[in-house]
Length: 229
Image (tube, rainbow, N blue to C red; front, side):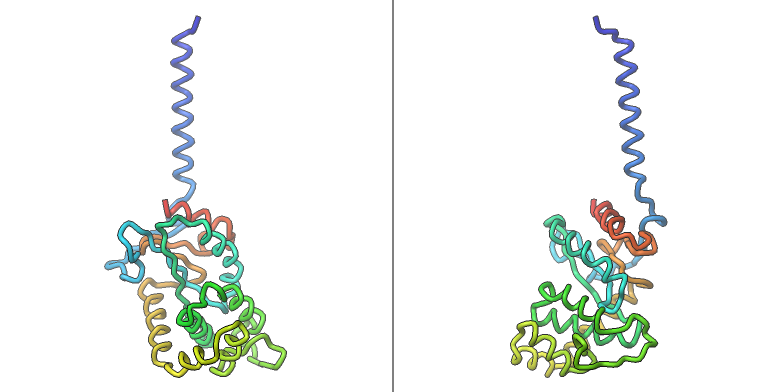
């Protein structure tokens, strides 16, 4: 025969334990500790999704940033499994004058519609072609993977990656457009006060960066997924 009193006690403690578990789970990521709540008024339109009901995720990065390079494989994998209603966009930043050429190369790839195909290759090429120390001399040689300091070097790289010479020549012949894109990206990073990279902002409301994740790529992605929910 079932002891109803004992059963009620079991149910009570089961519910209590479940409640504690849910509370602990919901508190697993703490604002100010694991991520930052932004106060952007108004939120720049570039930080918001183009489709109603969608979520916009913007990554601020540079091909010259070794920490961005470290995170990139995990972020690329996340893109393959992200929810269908999540829009993802990259914005390059220039914390150093030398990084301007990397921003230019990024927008060249965007305009040539090869950004996603060449993104990882560009990262590897830059990280292997340029010293991490911005004060180190910039010495280029024939054995260097690429020289992005000139249009000729940019042209040569994209041609080796299968881009038609006529397409890259037409793009580089219009430097005003590239300068406008670079200026817009820089203005956006300043508007949302990006102080370090890699940084990811979700819907203009939440920011995740290495300051909160300690450079742990798994924690970075876990925090991003938590904020998406």
